[in-house]
Length: 290
Image (cartoon, rainbow, N blue to C red; front, top):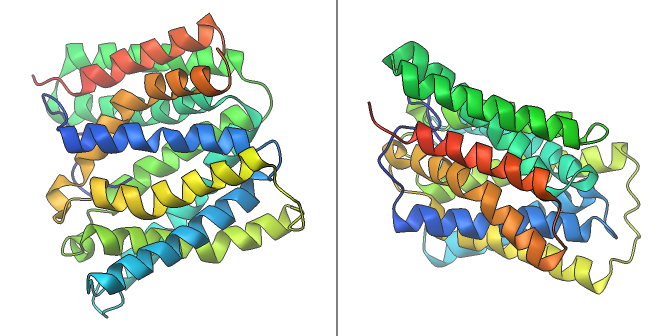
């Protein structure tokens, strides 16, 4: 969920460590949980419940471990912007997954991220062959995803990817470099907890709905994974390490989401599988050196 101002959001690295892979696999439970809950809970209401509950859980965790997330420093400005970007990206992703399948949403969201990274690598590092191949594969995955998706969901997913790229760059702002992972997550969840309820009301969500049992379980997964598990696994204490999980996530998320959705919901079709494979190949190329 994070990266920096001068460092690309998907940095070239020979591979991701076990911690990043574990967090990426854990994260992929969330898109499928959103899709399952969408049958009985509106997407923006889901996002509101999940982020507000996760914020409370994270605050309790920081109190228990004496992490000074509320200490005043120079991080308030960029932290507030980070929270707004996170909120917009998360809201768009919830909307996208409620309209198209979770694997397709992952293809389009991470397709935008991978293509942007490969383009920056081409300009800044001159990795012509690898970067062009990554761009072509990511573009092919996105095009196939657009052909398979219906309605506005595809565009919400692409917009979420573009916002995630900007969010990733901002999270390594010099004024955020000294922040630990808990404080970064705190800024993100505060932004979401403030803005998403308003967006849900404006969208006309019925807050008196009675979610199904599957919807309640799915909301619980989103709360626990987003509020507790990811901060513990994901965030390194220093800003220099924050881009790495996003690289692992782009590499793992498409196929992992496809596998999890197939197990829980059903097989979305061979073309969706092909799009996930194309994007995984593109993401793998972005981790190659030279």
